Figure 1: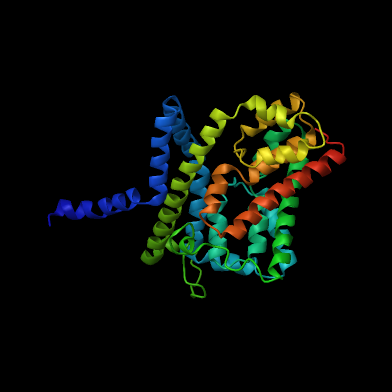
Figure 2: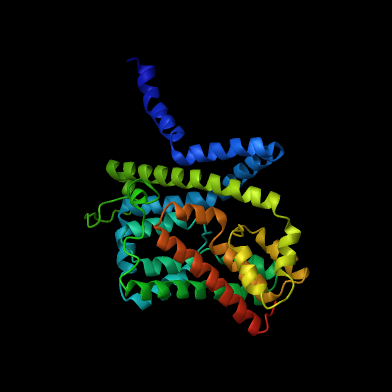
Length: 350
């Protein structure tokens, strides 16, 4: 075997593996079906997917880097110990930390996957998972400027509140003996997390790059996590592009802006599949308020969309067991409705 063949052997093997991946095949099949059914939409959708992946790349790189660093340095064990103490304290801590963290609903997935692999109980993970995408410091400032300080404060409180609701709901369910082993079997072995053997001792080495084995583990975890998220998010962004193309914005505005008693729950339901993690959500929500959407409906819409957008939901579907996925969607939806109702009852200051 020539030197060139040896050099190309590993990249070609990875290419064959990628082409044979069921997720990649599903994405290519969806593009083929779209080309047949609506050829005019094919190029705009491909462009949308590429632009969305590029726009979220810095946030995903940060999250993947943190997850890989935690695995290679052994800090994941430290995180597990921090969040494995008193259940009430850990849920409150995770909710507050999540409300201030800079991760969107997609960027938070590598973090929660790493936490679950590290043995962190599901209750604080769920609290952080639900709270993190709703608000962060930069989003707070931009929300004050684009919508108003009252709405920004309410959204921050909603972030922490949804996290608390989720964490304590999981605690209650765990006491009944449910929600054991939340990760899917294939996700545990080759998905989105570090993938170490539970109970395996590993001393913490903050400067892990001095050890070849830890450097290799960092590369392995970062590569596996990045590929896992990229392929699932590609499908997710393709679905979102079709939703934006085929569901008129005027219909959304009319559905959630009539001020009826059903406006808040309907706004949350409409918000669930909508990707509202980007800062473009601020002018969108401001425009909906100008079109007649109430403050409570706007908060429900923004909260539900931030927690459980289509891209995040598809990635989560590939990561956790169906019972955990259903709980994640239900808590996000229920928490958003409750936040909107409380905000509306409080006068909904914008």
